[in-house]
Image 1 (tube, rainbow, N blue to C red):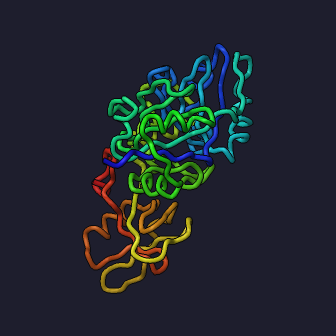
Image 2 (image 1 turned 180 degrees about the vertical axis):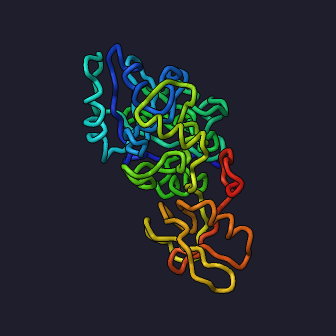
Length: 309
């Protein structure tokens, strides 16, 4: 039996939120219900503009008296600066913690090796840190926030090291976005990018920044686009490459979306659902990014639209 893999996610970093008011502070800012976070459960959430546009994606895990935010390392300082004005008189402190590192744990047997159930977000201590089932999708495996020398704990649990390319293929196959690489900052709408299907929004909690716009999109079914896993027949297009729908019989191509991350024949693309439906209903129509044919893959999470079932 092949051992499950671990990959250090050096592009992710940790921002620690401490203080007596840490839960209430984040509750009014993030898209998920922070009251549900705790030693046994981690969350996936977004931090938005007041207009409901994407700023940051976050994993929130509890360790001792702190909430650890797994965020983009290159944008961690910016996240802290954006959060600080909301602190007001709350008893909260926000500090980068470079003693901790983020790891992805995946492939067959990953959860069993950790003694974790197939339950998104289930968390437990490990090696002086915390490990949790990926809150978005149990098929994604687990994530860990550990001391930087925490690889010993992972290898003792039966994991083998794997390069970032292996993790990239894993997450792209599952349709999982990766921060600002796949969502345009101050422009992307989270319901077009999987946050609902991947457990990133709690519809029962109170207000948070951007809540009104997000709720309106949900209940009025306003989403017209969707970030989807796609197969590529041809060279890997650069992120941002326009995707066109070429109709059967040669008519004028129409705008269909644009590429996001991609590697080795698979990637993510933000596609208009109408274009996906048209391509699926006519085998002679084609979605193309330059010379590369784009074929939407079956959506791995709960489908919310016939075009992605």
